[in-house]
Length: 297
Image (cartoon, rainbow, N blue to C red; front, side):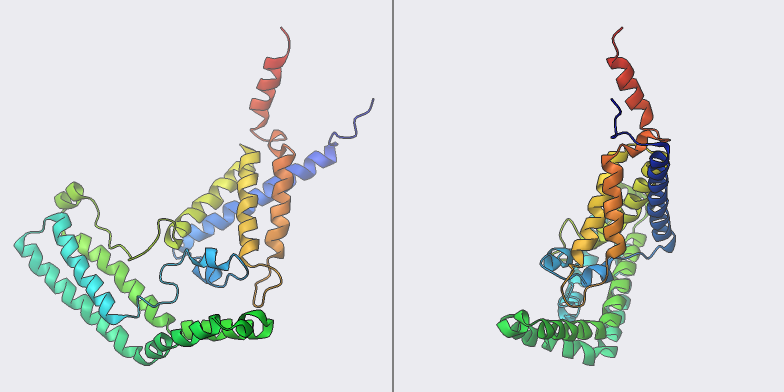
């Protein structure tokens, strides 16, 4: 009896072409993110809409800038980091002098940032009470047009302080490098790298995600190109694409279109469920070995 479940030659060619095409796309996406050296998904995650928006935005440390724009708190954090670094490395008295100079210069930089952005910072910090009232008012959350207006006002307020937040982040990263540079190579080797931790930042955070995504993209891309562990690679790729679609839940105001990601997610499901790696791929080898081992002697 003829089996209509088998793929013909054109079906196999189509499946291989689809696998290689999507694999190349994932690989190039990952490579471009690594080459850019400044990849960040913060903008996309910040704009997440729908019931899962809070889950996505929870990845962003201090996403409303409330902590970083509190000058007294940040100065306290930076001063404390100097003391922590001194204890971490066991700095000498001479190194302590260099540490104090570095701390003063850095705190002066922060003063300039807060002074230059003072008006926008003041308006943003004072807007939180207004946003809180909006959140507790059913009309602002149930009426789509008003909900969209509320989100627009919040976004504009945050956008106004973005220059200050980016400057603080840059000073933070540089300060961490400079604190480590004060220690000698022997001290660094013995104590390990000093990390200027961000308060209340969770284990799963956006900085970690941004480091993982380029490697993830390249790995999925290579697996699909070679037809290696295709069901697993395609399944993980489909889950990633689905997460992108869910971050911009269709039907909510201000969502970005995710049609391309939805189509690629479906294509990855096809690759996952149709043994696409067995055709012109490395998955053929374990499959052939398994079937040969099952044959009677």
